[in-house]
Each structure stands twice: as structure tokens, then as C-alpha cells.
Image (cartoon, rainbow, N blue to C red; front, side):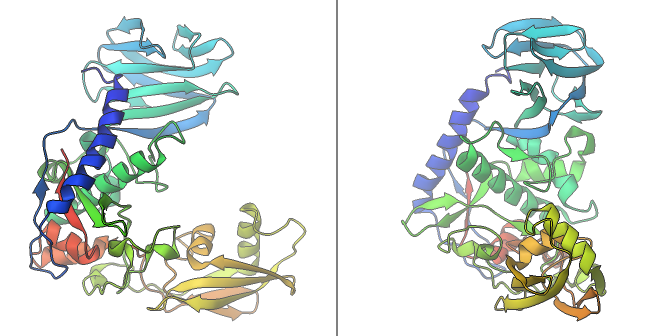
Length: 415
């Protein structure tokens, strides 16, 4: 089947989740304690879905190449031209259509570049599996979206999410998390945009075929089609956003502290004790300094403070989570203007290099703010990657690791 026939796979992706919801009612209940291996419930064979990954754009131009035969189709799935290869070529848009090298595709808002050999497609000098859909935006910009089978997508995700030295079981656990997260985004956001996931930390880091390694590929193949489900308040079992982060610092936190997540998703309620992420270099981090000017400019850049504000004069912690993370801050500017902001949003605005996690204290020192007693890296929701690695080194399996960090979840093989 040609890669450009993605609509069939999109519909199949929806069917996959629907089947998982219906069939999961017969699953055996896995325990949340370690050493009790969860059962994977099989379902009937279903087609592997396609995931749409935004790689670039809107941009003035991109550089593409294909190291082998390929075909270009227009938005009506009509073949425009076929060639034996495409050397490095600029791709851009103008009022008349989309230009690829010396070829112009007119009268079409998008076109598909479909290689005949998987993995020969290159965008901005990085190789990807699957096909490439190029959109011409209303302001004559280019938007590039990789249409790729989800198992191939995962092989380009894992090497960007985990250190290569990590155990195979950690990679397997990560593969199941990443697969579940991608399918959740695909189903919940499919009608609102032209892609399912970003290729960055906004979704999951995806670096394509160029970074594939055998350990990650083995982990993906060994867990093919397995996702996690949670029982919702309506009694149905459904996939959920399997958040994960580098180092939780000892305790995971509730997803409700970082996103608009329903409290009925038991695996994301947090409060999981993690004794094994002490192997992380970020389990404890040294004190950091942030100037009042840095905070002021960062908040202005994100539109949280008006341009006429001179400087932030105080940063106060007004609420913490049960295990000590900063849940809410009050920012005082020019001595009188006040802004309340969640701890996680503040961390993302300031940047993870300056504030690795909200598991810390904030102390004022003149025109600077000291971040002290810091623990962890990332938001601390769901699976702790270094904690998972610590468990894997102790002999725990991927499914045991996942049942620990997502208590109440059930693994399902959906295709």
C-alpha cells in the first residue's frame, strides 16, 4: 500500500483505540506492586496506524532530497512526476503553487513525496522513513509533515529520549510510553491541525532514521502495538497521555499540576515513591541564580507582563504540592503589580537550564533569586526515566516498571 493513502490509516488509528476501549473490559487486573507481572491482553490484528509529525515550518524554504526512486502526488492523489532520485533541492511556495527543485506543482495546496525505498527521504539533511507531505500556507510559506508508520516513528524517538547506555527494559518501557502518548495525541487532536505530533519536546523528540540504534529498534519491535489504558469514571478503559520526565527527584506529581487533565485518570494522580532515580546527575542539583531582569524579560516575552513594567521585585511561593514541589507562585512587579502563575509554567518560561524542576526553594538575594535544595529534572509526572533505569538494573521488566509509575494502568496490544 502506498504511503500517500494515509486517510485509511487515520481511520484505522481511530478504530484501534475504539477496539482497545471495548476489549479492555475483559482484561485481568494487574497489580501496582513490583514483581507482579501485568498481563498483556491481545486483540484482533488491526492495521498499523500512520502518525503525522510536523518537521518544519511555516518556513520560507526547506532542503529536501531522496536517495532513490520516488513519486510526487498532488492533493487529488494524482501522480505528478516520478524520478530516480532527487539531489539536494530547495522546496518553497509561491502564489502559483509549490516548487521542488526545477519542478512546479500548481493548483494544489499540498503535495506528497513518496519514496519507493523506505528511509531514503531527507529533510534539511536529516533522513526520515515514510513520506513527506508539503503544504503551501495562505501566506506562501512551507509546512513539512512526515507521514510515517508509528513503529518506524518510535525508532526515531527513543534515541532522542534516552541515553544509549540505558538497559533494554528501560527502552521497552519508553517505547510503550511513547507509543501510547503519540496515539493519544493523534486521536484527541486529529481534527484541529494538519499533524498529530511535533518533532520536538512539545510532543516527543523525533530525530528520524538518522539516529536509529539497534537497542531502540529491538525495544520497539519487542513491544509492537502495546499501549497503556486507564479505567475512566464512565467505566471505560481508554488510552491516556503517558507523560514522562527525566528525573522525578523521589516522588512523582499529579498531571493536574502541569496540564488540564481530568482527575479520574488514576495512573496520572502522582504520589509514586521513586527510590531509584538517585543514579541521575540531576537527583540533586547545585544552587542556581536568576536575576530579576532575567525573570522580567522572560515574563514580558511570553506576554505575562506589560511592556511598561520596569522590573520584578519579588517572587513568592504561595502553594506547594503534597510532596514539596512549587505548585503556584506570585510575581510582584514594580512593587505593586501582582501575577499568579503555576510553578511548572514559570519553570518552562525561565528554562530548564536555569530551573531544572519545581522541586526546590526560591530565596531572594538582593536583585537575584537563589534556587536552592533542588531535586529532579523535568515535570515529574508519570514515568521517571532515570528511576525506570534504576529498576531495570535491579532486574525489573518493562511492564513491571510501567505498572509502578502508572498505578492502575493496563497494557493492551492493539495491533
